[in-house]
Length: 544
Image 1 (cartoon, rainbow, N blue to C red):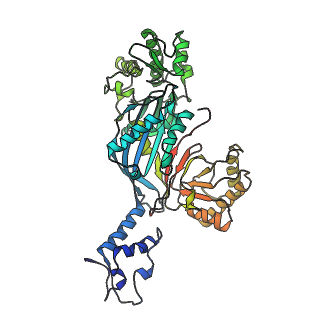
Image 2 (cartoon, rainbow, N blue to C red):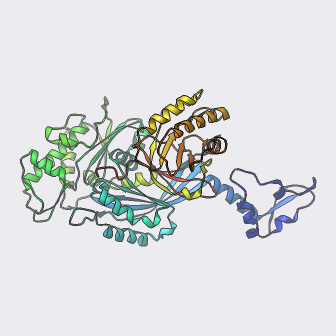
């Protein structure tokens, strides 16, 4: 066996002659961040040598590497009003090298397999056919050569019709057996805009070119716009315009009709009913109304009165100049000429009218291709919603994880200089007061740490937290603290060990959140001692 000298001296101790399997328990017993104790390194003599066998040295190197590197096999599944598809990827995350940071960042991402794009199956009552969807997902695993047990984490992004409550629960049930790994995220309009803008490549394009890009994602039920300046999203907007709002058979029978179509048809005095006949000229008038609303938004002009009720969010902010417009979503495939087939819906005619506005100069802004079209959301889901925690986390009980759909509250705290206990308590109390008293779900407090992690500063923050929690009447399954700085473990020890907090406690750091985000906390990954975190918008929100 080859010997690799570590320390020089006169003789080698016998303890490193043990076979590799016998040494692994010793290696596993070394806590993350703690050097092996001296009895593993030397005997009592001052003059001696130590040698590691190749196998033992390799095991130690591998152990250290796993503490600073996390490689995850992930699946992103996009289920929308129009189409569904999934993608398997391998993501490599590495701990930041800069001092005092234990955050992990994505350093590489490899797409392992992409599924075909299928029309989302619906039943006769216009709800998603979960059984047929399961067949599609099962076939994807077989075709990809991957087994469910090989997947570390997954994000199921529901958009459009899929986010309606009955659909979302049915789809969530498909992944119930993998509750520790999979998360089912209903993408609210703003999150979907962000996913599409990132996944399409529009954000990267804006960052690289240093310009203003308006990204437009036209899916089956909605159009999502994101205004991007130098890689930063300034604002998002959603409007009920999509390619699958109306679906007809080859002979003109209306097979599917969204409420949006009913509204626009009534505004134009058009009579249209499910399973009735749709006249071509009536369909054209509806297409013109929907397309012109998108064209007006791109031109930063007011939409026509017949489309005023289509807005799902507030308007985009105005900017002096937009340098380029990019598209993604199913309709974008027609805009860029990558698709020609007809599916009995509005996708192609919508695209043709929007593209004609560019070609004729009605839209006097350059049209650019960001790189990804119909797969933009699933790419955004797999790359931009998953993070892992920092290393210095705290769990009072590992059985607390995994946890899903934890609403996030972000109190406005001034942690830059002197930390006033009374101010901390008041700010957190004001934030907790926003929650309905009968809401007993687990909540997460997102804290933005600033300044040095000096004991008296951490103690003041802990004192303020204790005062606020003591005045809060609702008993939670656990207190969840999610902090952007690397102080979670120290803060938790002060709360539990010094201040006598009796509640169960989860403290996670290295994650930045905002109020009204929702998070899923996955199972603890060892030996890196990190937690996968999926950040998403409202899930199963009221009224859906």
